Length: 509
Image 1: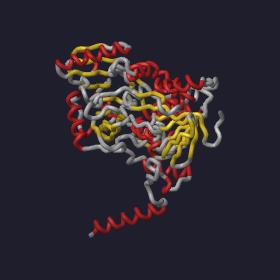
Image 2: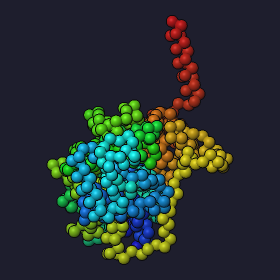
Image 3: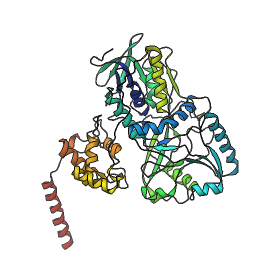
Image 4: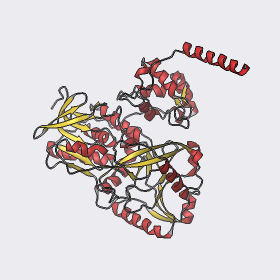
C-alpha cells in the first residue's frame, strides 16, 4: 500500500521512547508509518522525566513481560546506543541494606534476578560496600554490575530521527481527538489539525493510554498517575558516589524508593518520591516532598548538602495498580480482542526505557503475523548525533574551530555548549525549535545557573540566524511564548545609560 495524503498503513499515537522505538522497528520494513504527537517535540512525557537507568532486571517478577523485556533490553542496550550515537555507561548498582532484617530482601532480589537471567549478581558485605562506595552508609548490598545509565531524552530523539530518515512521518503538535472505525480493519483518526486514515493504530500514549483506548470502545483499562519528584545535584559533587544507590524495595509502594542516580552528564539525581495524584498533567514539585527527599537521601549519603541542589523537577508513572494496592502490574502489549488491528500498550512504566527495543519488536511481531511484512534491505540502523565540543581533546577542538568558527563561541558557560551546537540543535531533522527542544539536544540551560546566562543568547541566535521574531520564540511550543516584543541593542544601551545617570543623581542626593 502507498501513502496518499494522510493515509498510512500504521499510525502510532505517542512519540515517547516506546512510540519512537516502534517507529524505528517498523521502518525496517516496507510499511508506511506515521507518528502523531500532541507536544512540540518527541519524548516530552514520561520519557524525558525518568532517571535514565538501564535496569538489569532483578526487580521484576519472574515470568512477566516486564522481567523478560527488561533483561533482553539490558543485554542489547549498549549496541542500540552505539548505533544511534547515544551516550551509555555501565556503572553498576548497589541495593543497600541499612539494617539486618533488610538482608532477606537482598537475597530475594538476587534469587529473583537469577531466575530472570540477570548476570553477575552478588551480595556484598560492609567492607565491600565501603570499597565501592566510601561515602555510603549501609551494612550490606546487592551488587549489580550490569546496570547502566543513558540519556532518556537523547535516546528518544535518536530513535525518532533514525525512523524519520527511513521514511516514517512525524506530526508534532498533533493531538488525537477521536478515532472512528471505518470497517473491520481501517480507522479514521481526527486530530486538532487534520484527519488520518490507517489500517493499524498503535496506542503508545503512556499515561493517556486508557483515554485513547476508550476512543474505540475499550473500557477495561485504567491508568493511575503516580508522581515522582527529584532533586538535581551540581556536577561539582559528582564525586559523592560511583554507582547507582538504591534502598531495599518496600512492599506495596508504587516505585523503587528514593535513590541516588549518577547521570550520564555528571549530575546526581535524588529521588523519585512516590505519590498517587488525580491529574495526569500535574508536574508540580512540593516543598514537603523536597524535604523528605533530602532527609531520606542523607540516610544513605550524609555528605549531601542543600547547597548542592541546582534544580528540582517531577515525572509521572503510568500505573495500572491503584493506590490501595500499589506495586507493579505487568505490561499489556496486545491487539485488542474487540477492535481488530488496534494495538494497546498499557501500563508501560519502569523498566519501560530499558525494555523499549524488545517492546517494539513484540508490537512488530503482532503485525507481522497478520501481514507478513517485507523487510527493507536499505534500512540503516546508524544515526549521528550532535558533536559535543567539550568532550573532544584539545587538538580536535583546535581543528574544529578552524573548520567552523562557531565552535569557538561558548553560549552556555555551565555546560560549555558552543554556538555551533545550538545551530545544529535548531536545525534538527524533526523541525522542533523551542528552547526546551534545544535544551534536550545540547544541555544548554541545564547547568547551575539554569539558563540565567545563556537563555537570552540562544534567543538572540534564533533571531539572528533563523529570522525568528521575539514573539515567535517559545519555551515549549503550543503558545508558550516568552516575549511580546524586541528591543534593539541601540535602545537597550540608551536605557542602560539613562539608568546609570539616574543612579548617579540618587547617589549625589
